[in-house]
Each structure stands twice: as structure tokens, then as C-alpha cells.
Amino acid sequence: MTAFERVPADETPPEPSPATLVDPPPTGLGSTLGPIARGMRPRQWIKNLLVFMAPAAAGVLGDWHTTLRVIGAFLVFCVVASGTYLVNDVIDRVPGLATRAAYAKQALRDKLIDHKEYIRRTGDDMPEIKDWVWGKGTLARGATSTSADNV
Image 1: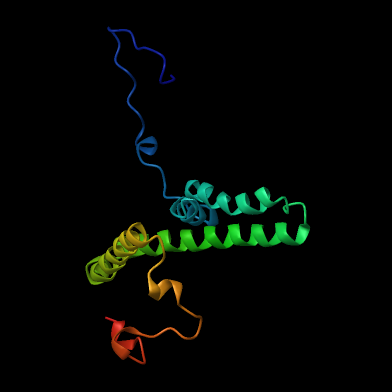
Image 2: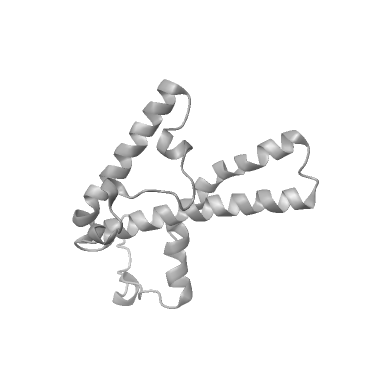
């Protein structure tokens, strides 16, 4: 009987067998990759297509070298965004980790709010972002190690 068939009023529907009530847990590679792929939130990747707009407007997407760089930038944006989603999911789901990481997550949210407000007010990135140079970054409060961050 399908879900669309009606049972006459004078009959009772057949009882499902116990085997059909609970499906066995999935096993194998597919059972692991599915939740990870959903956790990466591929629907959010659509906005990363904006990296193609400037080269397309400049008419240089026909150059294979530029196209490869733009595709690389798109992939990097997707991986970084997905990594952030996955890390947040792990923090939220691992017992005891959510409470320990709550401060760090809130500090990141607060910094994003501060940054957006600064951009709205000045039209530019905060100096700590705009003037940042790889290898020249400073740790908070003059620390020389991040080991104190490990709780």
C-alpha cells in the first residue's frame, strides 16, 4: 500500500513489521561524507561566484591564466567558508566544547560587528586588517605564544 492509497473506513491499516520501524544506521564512506557535505553548506558558495565579476567585466576571463586564478580564488573562498562552518558545528556538537569555546565564538562575533560598524562609519577596513602584513602580525597583549589560549 502506498501513502496515497486510502484505507476503507471499515478496515484497519496493516501494522508495520518491527523491521520497518527502525532503519539500521548507515555505514561506510557515504554515511560519513553526506553529513560533512551538508555541513559544508554548498548553497552558501553561490555568493563566491562574485569573484568572477571583475575579471568578466574587464574582459579577461578568456585568458586561461586569469581564469585559472579566478577558479582558484573561488575554490579557496569555498574551502575557507566551509571550514568555518565545520569548525562551528564541531564546537556546537562536541560535549563540553561548546561551553569552553563560547567566549571565543562571542569574541569573533563582537569583532565582526565592530568591523562592520567601522566600515559603515569610515568606508574602510579597520587598521588592524588594512595594515596587516603576513609574518608581521602581533599577538594579543604582547604575547609571544598562543599556548595560553589552550583551555
